[in-house]
Image (cartoon, rainbow, N blue to C red; front, top):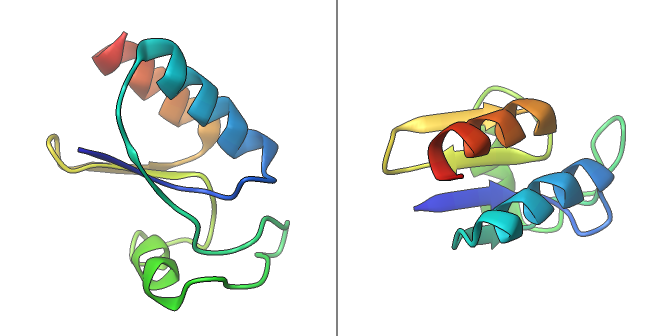
Length: 86
């Protein structure tokens, strides 16, 4: 299962969502905080804790539970999706 920690107003998150839609991949969306360079306001404490458990307070953050992979950075996520889900 893919889980995407993101925010609707974030252009980097939109890039990842578009790629997921292009490949027809199902995923779960978590909206832990609002976008912002320094980290926007937290909107969900539980999912924000899950986001930061990866080591950063940065969106987008993709977790692929089937492969045991978690990553930040939209470009890296898109490359990963192209490699494993295209």
